[in-house]
Image (cartoon, rainbow, N blue to C red; front, side):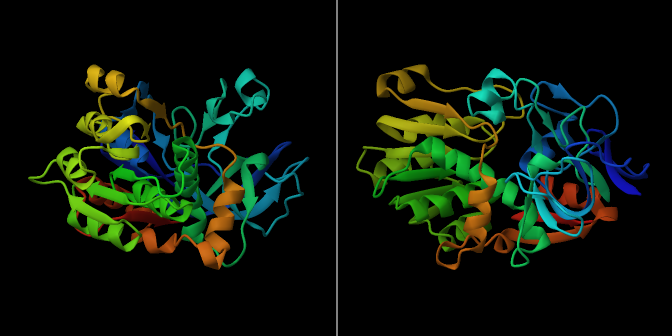
Length: 351
């Protein structure tokens, strides 16, 4: 079968690899249908690492995905504890926690000490035709969710977790730095939560326009104007209640702290290329900010599926998709995404 493997920075090749063996106990084999290209994939693609985790041998990237069950092993109970059967369409949580360590037992599987994660060295990801998954990580989806939408339940789950950390309240103000897919999903959820006003910022004009369409009170392209100055103008110097940093966590982290009000909350979702966070200590200290780091997600797939299928609160996952490529053109897709060519929001690889 075919798989897209990363050999080093900016070096993706389409290889023929062995098909997976039959699933064991608690495992399922799926035929992958669609894979979303995530910002964390782009970090690994650009640098051959993400944070302090380096790619040490050819690695299959991809962790936003869904597919069709083609074989199940013994004890094949899905994320709801129900039997999983061949032919079912599933979204897959890319994280496989041990479910036994201190963090898992405390209800924080995203902080599992023995976590395995698709597409993060040394675990291969989903840019391949078939793969073995933990059945506990599989969630059946209805036919009303497309294959691409099934893959994008993962970033929706990340956004849900970030909004949970933000503890949003009705009529509390929000600022979002970065209007990529995660930022847009956070924006949509913030609007559904009753937050208002919601201010959004991005480097690219088409993303700022998309933010307005998705519910931002106003959105700006970061060029001559500083987002900090804009927020001061919009709030008469007060700042906003909650800031979500959903960009590349560079100078945007310091900006987020400057934009928050006294006693405000800052949620850091983006991942910095240099694995460093910089902010002015006196700003965060004197404001008494609560700063939280968002680590993937936890217990979000049922809620994500509900949001994607309930008309009155529907989150338009397919509306995020701007480009689609076949598996054989994965290298082209990644190159286009890292160049941020005009009009790019979310790229999906159809397997």
